[in-house]
Amino acid sequence: MASEGSSYGDIHRYEPPRESTAAALAIVLLTVVEVVFVGLFTYGLISGWALTEFGNMYMGGILAIIFIDLAFILMLYRKEFLPDVMIVKKRRRKWEDLYVRSDDMEGTPFMEEPWEGVKKALYPYYKK
Image (cartoon, rainbow, N blue to C red; front, side, top):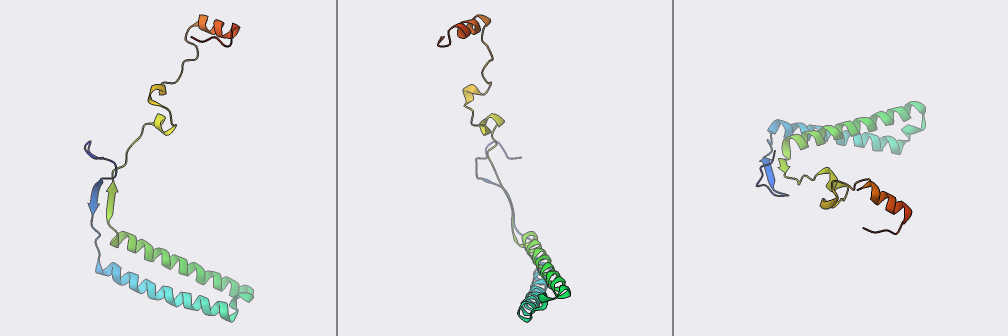
């Protein structure tokens, strides 16, 4: 939890990335695999592999492998090479989210007094 002295936009926690060599090597290898499958997919499009039923499923499988590989690359990059930063945000009360003014936060009473209700019912333009 943020301390009371923190203001909006202050960095509360900053942990530098690990930048491991194993993750960098894994990203490089996954990128090579990605390039191979993108090349295979492009060659398949040019050659017309998707014109048959089996070829269409094969091209869909290659496309799925491309996106799964890309997801692993991005996951490794995010986990190992981006810093962990927590920024203090201003918490608002629920009535502030509804754009209610502070003097109206309790709401308006249904009826102040019974006699006032009778006066308003008989004379609609009655003001206090």
